[in-house]
Length: 481
Image (cartoon, helix red, strand yellow):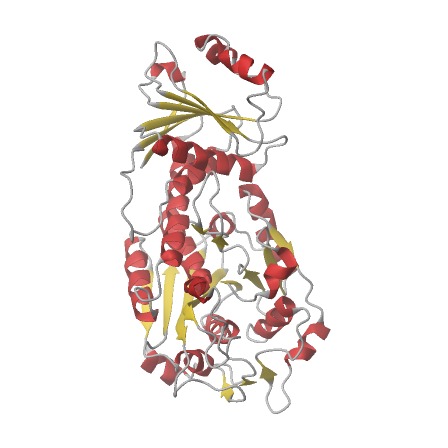
């Protein structure tokens, strides 16, 4: 799908559809209202158009123009970046449903064109092809703005990274085990101009990645660790940001078997790795001045005669011993070795993303991403970039006392607390033991990685959350981040 900019009047274009995002109580464009003989004013006066968030009113034709569909899209009372992002996605989806080939989006003078382009690409995503689908009609999105086309291009590239993450999360585990995921990551990394390295189980064994191997040993599909690196020709900083993702391609819970109800959703337990792959491929194409490396820790957590048992004590890459209390607390184990590896490779800052705990859904629902870490500047920078692009994070405390529940009796650590309280935080404190005081932030996306109900701007499925924030973090990096 092509995205272009047009600084002039929409009437100069041959377009099939015109989308107009409008907030509550916003008066209609006078010229457009005149072209439809005052219909927009009439809709508002009759309260058939309210501007309510997500609302859509359709006018079938604008006389004496090529426009076959006019969409009024609601932004709510006080539009924020996430509302504009959603409206752009909704415009594309409405146009596609109407089998329109081209759709123009009318924007105010100060509109964030990059954000709108990201939303338009987001709206173009369709679930991976396991069912027959209608032909996709939208070929071009025209943003009616005087902004620089380069900003729209940046949005298009970032949007591609988001949709890559969404596509991968939606693929069922029978088609995406650790090896297949690693191969796909390598292909995408090469296409984005990244340096790629795939470590197989033998390399992990020689390295001493005992925690990652322990999670994957119950499966017939062995684990992988993938490194993808962006190295600018002239770095603008001595910093080296590492993005680390949990890639459990399917999580049965291991011998601590999950209940059967909704286990099929556990194909999404590689959402953190998908997020980081989406971000690093977009970064490779956007070419910021910061060095960025991505580590994807991939395993399948299965029960078998070879599986790690509750009560086993394993040794992680950094030499710490971990008693496995619950084999369903496996994500923190694969991340432990990946975080250690990041520090060994010279990370100056680390951000990890993971569908780590069910507890985060109890705490924050599916609205905000939990943000934890050991460095306030880094956490604040993530939250700020999230606000700028409409992604919402919520910081959780990391007091030293929260680590007590994760200390072992016969080992340095245990992988799960005996208590249910503060589960997201205690998991974060566990991860903190593997970063060697490197500035680090942890994103628990378990509650936000999946959209359980179709929205006007997206269908049911993976959300691609945090990709846009991480890309902006890398682009706008400074040594104080």
